[in-house]
Length: 467
Ligand code: 6PG
Image (tube, rainbow, N blue to C red; front, side, top):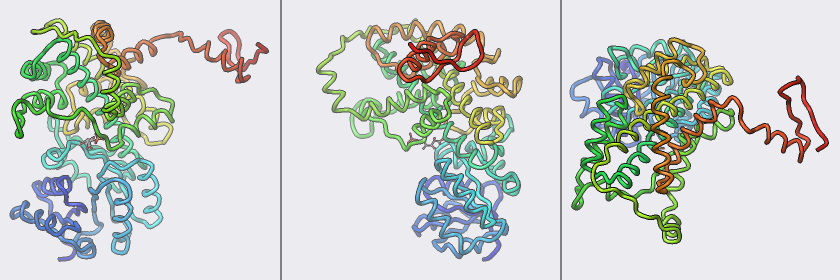
């Protein structure tokens, strides 16, 4: 059947298939391509009567789509994306649109965008967040590229995205690679929040002596307050999960080595390049690295043993303070990520609107949280806001929770509980609110040993001293 289907997907793994089934649920006809015939067949079975076609032939797949074609890729980031694009080139035509929905590195997206533009093929880098369930029932979608290429697919993407009060969690974000850039920063924030939650767990378990049951109840309660978010919700769920393969709860059987695919690291690396501090994200990436050094950690533990400080029984005060510390730390982590986006928007000419980004992150994605509605309001009040912490929206809550964070850190540091990400949020805050930092001394040192010059507080110009 030629010129029949509204939307095509390449890569029919769980994510690709679910995204396509979601589209089919909304009344659009879909075609899927995969080298694995069983996956292509699974699409047709799971679509159960809705117009959906699975195939293993690229030529047949492309021909089956209505023109101009909408072809989305959900294949592993890196080389597979380039090879799929090459395999499509003999068949696609002027004005067709290729969408990369994976976690591609934004510089690869930039390169592919220019490469396909020369061939009059539209290309859109599009972040999709929400895991396999999100893909099936409503993800947060972050498209970027050329506005005119977005318009034809807009009704489909709006239909399948998550909704918050009827508002779709998708919007055209900006030029070039902006969609993948925003998704990268989303993931950086995700790394930060996950690490902060892990530190809260460490404190509550090892200092507060909370059992898994109590941890489940605590996170569940938090999820009904100002910390309400997807990550807090699933954390509560984790603490209740029984182990299928043995006695007890699963969380205690999981090896403490966290893996990563690179998006958090890219955020840190790029933030360094841009000169925008994101220390909570840096700490989260560093902690994944440290977690991987299991053998060395065990050796270190034998060499420098910790004193056990666990207080048995519920520790109400600690629980309350950790909740406030998390509120402070989540807000600061969003502030860091969004500051990076504000800078990238200018430097890379993305034309991002931070209110829109906060809006589409309120539902569907991994970092969705009630806090994002407040963040949206902050940017709506001050569209040019560089850093969230400068907004009056957060002033009172930040001032109050900062005190609890300080107390939590004092307790943690005294007991030797590693709280790298939490500490990074507070020291970032302390440095950021210092009108005067000691970096005048660094300038003096640079000039003394390397004649690197310095500026003065009392005179304009550039100075050098023979020290
Ligand atoms: C999402 C997630 C997703 C990714 C995780 C895991 O938004 O749905 O970000 O894209 O699978 O971030 O990443 P790591 O393997 O690097 O932890």
